[in-house]
Image 1 (cartoon, rainbow, N blue to C red):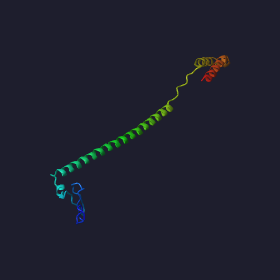
Image 2 (cartoon, rainbow, N blue to C red; image 1 turned 90 degrees about the horizontal axis):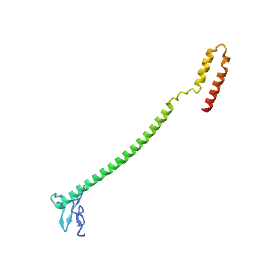
Image 3 (cartoon, one colour; image 1 turned 180 degrees about the horizontal axis):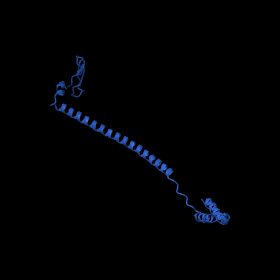
Image 4 (spheres, rainbow, N blue to C red; image 1 turned 135 degrees about the vertical axis):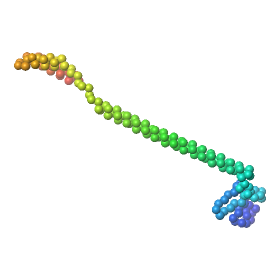
Length: 154
């Protein structure tokens, strides 16, 4: 077999594998470099290579967590903005409905009497001439003319 393979199938060695210990249940990797067994060094926290690996792993983990926090914040901001837009639309629709309802609930202004003078003169005449109402014929005609004029101008 080649120099990079072991006769024991449970142990694999390769100079291309970085000096780290890879473990899996039922499987063991032996890390060597220039014929030197680096497996023990991979478990040694005082080894500079292992320390660099652990620092890199920690920094990578922190970088991933920061990136995930940024993505979560962006997603939150997007959802928040969408909800705010929906709330603004609902508020605008509600305000439009309130305005419409208020316009329908307003009582019309009382009609002004355009022939008030003619009416009061006619009533006074009719009260004074209760036995002979024909004496107020001219006033009835004036009142009628005023009423027709005010209806046609409205």
